[in-house]
Image (cartoon, rainbow, N blue to C red; front, side, top):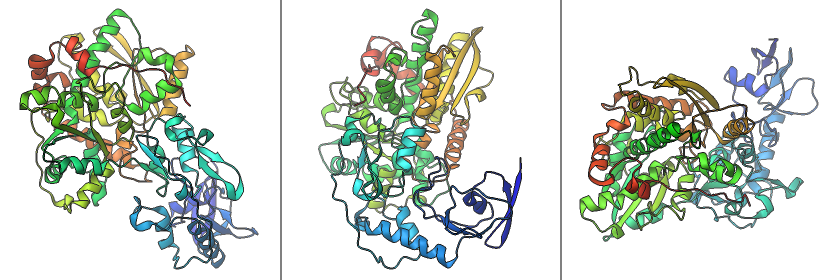
Length: 574
């Protein structure tokens, strides 16, 4: 590979040919401010915040897209550069709503950060403020076009990472806007609620549908018995909201915080993840033995399920009928738990803390009330829980650890790794292999399914039979996998699909970050907790065994199907 030598701010640097000026600067610790740039998205060069001066060129260039050249001399902080950046930023601010103090991104807004970095003390221009309707049609995402800075990040992630294209740029020049197909609400288009657009939006033009007030209302209602479940990925990310290093495991602190917030019972979604593995594992075994509707595809990611319903309805017979762990827990809270605790299920308000915005839409699905009540009454994201903790004045980082309530707080290591891509497959293999082989596994780590590649595949021998498996994370990778199956280019028995890059650890409700390494830290935390668990196989969870013995009966039996399984249907994209 050809090497290029250049100078940036009088510092020599050598990089590979094709490297951008921005990347070269980052290599030597020279900071260039950016807005439309995102390390995991296609380069755009739209905002011009990152302009630099290149000796010999008449005009400033966008460093995020401009390639280096041999003997290039770059200045990132000249008078013309500083003046140009400030002018661009002032023009953006002039068109932006001045409601920072009540904005959901206050303190986490890249526009605010840029204003501070570039020393903006006044705005010399008077812009035309937009007065467009805020789109609240989705159960998961709120879109406020008045705050959009036209960086295009949301458009790129939706089209390229997620292969959905629920939003796009319309019009030209100063009339340009980011909007939905036919200017309809998000709920009227192909949006699957994954929230990846929120994760890359630098401002509050996109945010989750806030359910914290509904939860506060339930907590303050003396008639309500409020139970809460916490998803695996939440405990590997919540600490970031309070200044803790990425990958900090804050399971015990989270339980303590929830107790201080006033929840009556704090349970663990991992209990329901173990239950999901039992149901899905037996479903797979049935399909494998009878060679029917293979491959079986996991159903615990609502973003993926929504994508399948809209883009690949012909694949729905292959999707597992199992509800997700969130919904399994929800229905058991109003049946099994209500019966054991002698509580009227009508008085139970069930809350889930999830890393995923699509879980809000999942909970709102009409079929998710097989107990006679809505399975889950409210879903809050990791970010929303952090907001509630701050509002209550709780010093999260210094909280002592405490334990989940039993029995629905008991879980295994298999339930823990549900939060990372490949984790559902690995958890299922631990159970399926032991059931079919009739003996204990010599090792519980299925390294073949781990990693962050968009599509991974392996062949596992179970009961002497080769079982071909595949894992996809991110919907564009799911599309690639499904297209290969439809074209007859690949054949599998079992597939795990997670709607978000990295799985739930990269969900649309997780703490915001532009660091592509953040998901690796969160994944490492979950694998670490798996190793620390005394029980690491779902079918050995004592609380789940008791659930079947005293309440559900046989796995995949009549009562289990009534409560824990569901159906999906083809949906129009528009």
